[in-house]
Image (tube, rainbow, N blue to C red):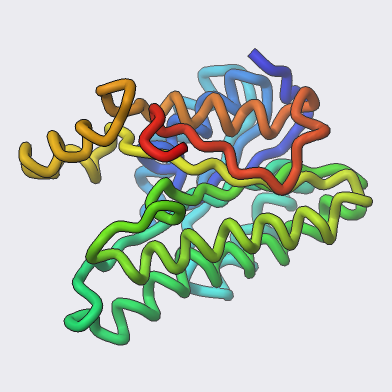
Length: 247
């Protein structure tokens, strides 16, 4: 595994699924980890798992749709653990629906959380990384941001926006030794995908050359690599972890 000893990571949406797996892998690599989500109780449970790896952990309640929550959360992490050196923008919501039936509020909520929230959180963390002249920012986008999917215009607009955001910020901050990359998961086994009807699940698997869904650890390991010194020459990239679903 990569060594992240001495690093302080903040993982949004860290209370379950890919976020939880990522937080635990970063801890296994030696990083102190703060997990942020809307449910403080779930974050506390993950923080206990993190501490079992012999590192420090912090649970932080916060809604990415709230600028006030974002500011308070980052200030709390910096005060209790230290300046954030690894930011994993994982949290996201869905409000699926065909475009003609999509409510304006469903559009706004998804864009505010999945894209604007990342912008605001990154703004809060960049001064810490700039001062240290080192940082790792990893944004979780999606395979559908590159290939499309009916009924998800809002989600895809936000996730595709994240790819552009990643490239822009990577160019802005490369001279400060801050790398910015994205990981694009494909069909991953999570609580969200577990409720899919069997027909929809089989249709998805038919599109995957490896003929199986991915696991949350597949994404977590990709994030750990991008957070490591070994990935110091990788920036502005989208790492596809999708079993060949999109090439």
